[in-house]
Image (cartoon, rainbow, N blue to C red; front, top):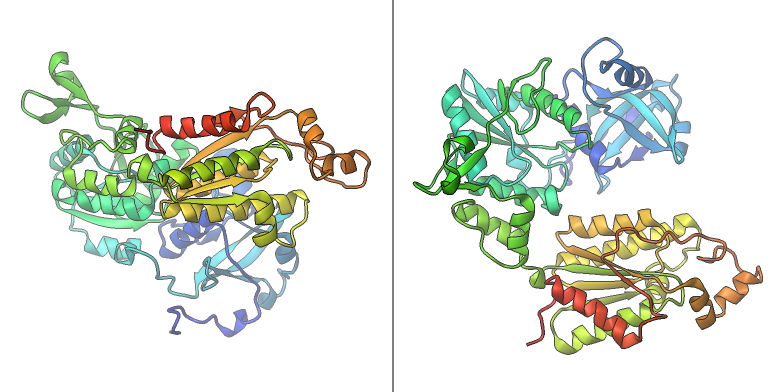
Length: 507
């Protein structure tokens, strides 16, 4: 064991290329290595993927719900020699570069955008033990050893457990006389950007409201298909020893644990109990709060009602999602060169610095190009990388409850979405402002002479001339500085931030 806490690869892998998979692939890798994806022993190849698409089964006829795949850059795949055992392996590392596993590749194929799919068995070459709550990341075999004999009720706690969910769990465990196993997905952020660490803390906070339970953290991620995601979760739950799975989705069939769908509960204000909805007279019935209602209460700094949420759970949620005026925020202005976005951004930043309402970091497009993205050109790839860097820095500012104001051109919708996702994953807000000043107005302003040079063919890749600008369809606010003065545009942004709770209103 080295000082970094992982096992060095064997001699055969000394010269093997290394690659750090994406987050979802790393989650799948861990589930493969622990046996949670049994009978799979590696990433699927083309034959299995084709059979899965056509019949919902692997090539050997084994039922399986979803593709488990790995993609690598094209040069890495083309450098492999599948006929030579010494040249067919890839060392898979975590995001810090520490080896986790080796995949012995037996199949490669073009996938998309300069990437190749690779299939092959995996084996562990490092212990991979780092990060919060390691004591909960047990293998299925370890968990099965801990479970008492008899029925095991599984619950996938992919969101905080409030009183209605806790009542459903208690009723099912009591009815089945089953031991409770709570599987907490930690492979990705939960609803509203709730981090896995916060989710684990909320589940621990609800533990005194549960029957005796075993808790385990599982790196599950969603694929976006509710039915197939549910089928995969059922298979993973079965690997951990679950015999009955409590679900709020549809009944699932075909192997694995029996899935239970509880009836909807409501709060009975006559005695403060949660019961089946239809057993409570309408005048005494209070329905569970929706997720958006819970988020709204937290955003405005109101306590979650005790009839709905245990105080310890409410405390963890309030810590993770403070009122908007105390939470980090990314204000992202996008628009053509000359649209006025930098002027508006500076005006907003100056006002907030004067009032002291928020700690502000201004990431101006030109300054970022000089200090953060020096050396990048104006190809689509370089522009996307520039926005990714801006988005990462802005998200880190917001993670620590500051406000980052960004004003790049950001012509591509996908790059802007990435910036929004980074902010959300940091537990922050994101406000997209489209400075929609018309092209002809921007050209008249042309302080740097860029449009004139582009029209004359002296420069290439000018947004709005020979390179597209994808107008946002998801902007929270749209401004046109050909119709607004600078003060009016700045005022519109500040009004939006105040009305939505990100800035304290003037007294």
